[in-house]
Amino acid sequence: MPETTPTTMHVKLKIKRFDPAEAGGKTWWQEYEVDVHPDSTVLDSLIEVREQNDGTLALRCACRASICGSCGMKVNGSAKLVCKTRVVDVAPNGEQLTIEPMGNQHVVKDLVISLDSFFSQINRVEPFLQPSFVPEQGEYTASNDSMENLLTSMNCIMCGCCVSDCTVLEVDANFIGPAALAKAWRFTEDPRDSKRDERLKNLNDEDGGMWDCTRCMKCVEVCPKGVAPMDRIMELREAAIEAGNTNTSGYRHTESFYNSVKKNGRLDETRLAIDSAGWTNIPRLLDLAPIGIAAMRKGKLPPLMPHKSEDHKKVKDLYKSVEDEA
Ligand code: SF4
Ligand code: FES
Image 1 (cartoon, rainbow, N blue to C red):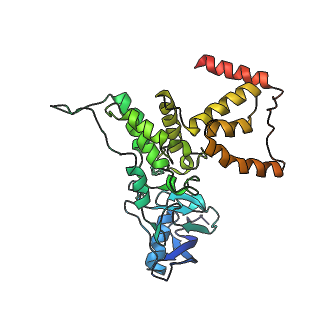
Image 2 (tube, rainbow, N blue to C red):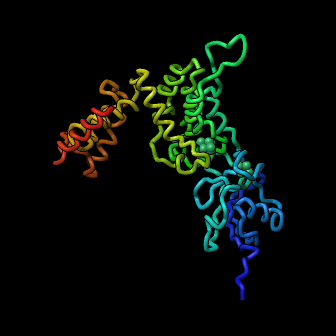
Image 3 (cartoon, rainbow, N blue to C red):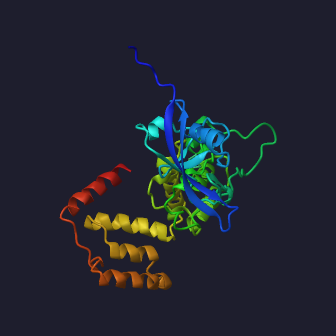
């Protein structure tokens, strides 16, 4: 008997629902099962649910081709464009899929989030070109190389997936966020923009700016367009330092980390905390005191005098070879 290719695939979905019309807003989980074509995406399955099972399910999509950025949702806990996510790739053995609205953004209904906070973050970086002059005739052109350099960031489709899974935004709503910083990088790197220094200074000084990223890599992992926001943030930091913006706890933290490992072959955590706060920043140092006391009580206070690692000479040699190459 010749093998026949299955014409449908059974998909099990567990969807987080939210109804704002109920007093205080009602949240609940609802399970659905649908049959779809074997090549279907998660979005196809959700549309099938809405069309065949439950017309009250709210979701947002437009292009269905990973272009418009409107179908971001959490699939099994991670933000994805559901129009780009095939069911067989996330549930190869027919496992139940968990679908939730994206994180760190206000939920309007079911799987639809408001993009207000996302665009407020983007607007904080003045996301438009500010040239020093406008040519009287023709266009202000830039070299191909300089434009190619911008491609990573220009690929952003404003889907909000990086913001959804940002672990800093989860605890600090004031953080400007990965998408806005990647957008800022795009203008600091554009040779036609005249506000580079100002942009770098603002993002360096700003509370919630470039130094608040903890380099967890989640934004790189979930970005569907290869923008790699964290890499752009690291480049912004380097550019800010090169431009002389060094009076921040972020810069002092980086410098202290670098010097302490270079000197001792391991991190001197006590010094790191004090250097990052700034030796003359008495209010910040006083803030740290209770943390130090709590750590001492639990026997977790790092030694006041750093121990040198046995291999510290090897570490020093490594530093030297890297510094010589730079
Ligand atoms: Fe989406 Fe990537 Fe742009 Fe973030 S950087 S909004 S994940 S395309
Ligand atoms: Fe446009 Fe998914 S529907 S990106």
